[in-house]
Length: 422
Picture: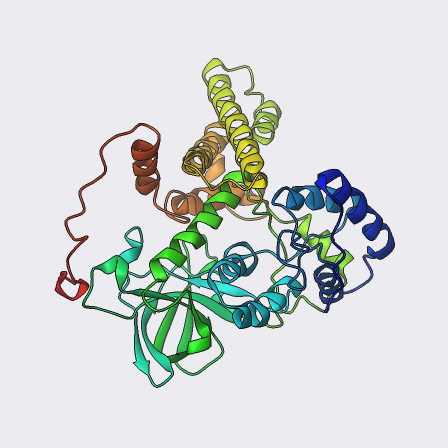
């Protein structure tokens, strides 16, 4: 167990302490697994988490301080992804002491990668309508159903699962939340091939998979509350712009034995979450227009200015959200505003690339203009406005929570789920 080496009061003291720790411990020659283990043992991996579980029990603002110091030192941050961003936080909130001690430390050390088993073919935006069932079997449950749009399922050790345990109560009250082991009979993962030729998502078939009592988080029938907490953490991080890309954790992904310096070099070549495409930012597109002698055209200049303005509004909204998160405030509707702004930027940048390049933008391959990236942008852009939540749902949130419009009627709220049409 790591010693309780909590920093002094205030973000300044935490910054000074993590700076001294980094000066003594940061070494890009060590492996990714060694570095993440050292971060977790020191408590600087997730400083707001409890002591002994990868954190130091500090306030929410400590995460931003540590992130800034890691950037200053050129060091890699802690593990990213579903487990770190959403899974472990709800285990800390809803789990018991045994579950926290068993599930959270492997996440902090990067020993495990988790995936999100929420969406289904008939339950996407209406998440409470999931039909994957968990049927009691002794001291556990047998799980049957299908999940879809699941990232990293091929290399995940566990999945955060929302399943129906009671069909005789209204849909929001019959759900339970599990941390499901993925490496077991009855779990089949099939990659989904997208229009752009890649497979970022998977469908997961559950046919006799088992969840034990120790895998149930928050109590039977309380799954909707836990799921809302998961989505709250996701919205907070997305709105604050803190969902940075990182190497996949877990032994199955095959990164833990790689020197962390090599991992950083590889990450520098990846596309970050903002902007949505390699040539999707306003500066990149302005440069492209200049190289093509199109930058003086009035209509194109207006569109480029619109893209730049959207980017600045998104950046400032993310800064406000980050400040609110670091003060421990719950996520507000600004996350929906940021989501819709990101969708608009993705589509506008896609259209502007083709506007600047003309018909040559439809060419693909290494010898094509911009190495064929416009084609990839066009095919990938269709996912924006769907992945991460449908844009129609985000507009409902803005209408109800910001504009004060009446809520949409929910005629099935008090109807037993068994009686609802399939």
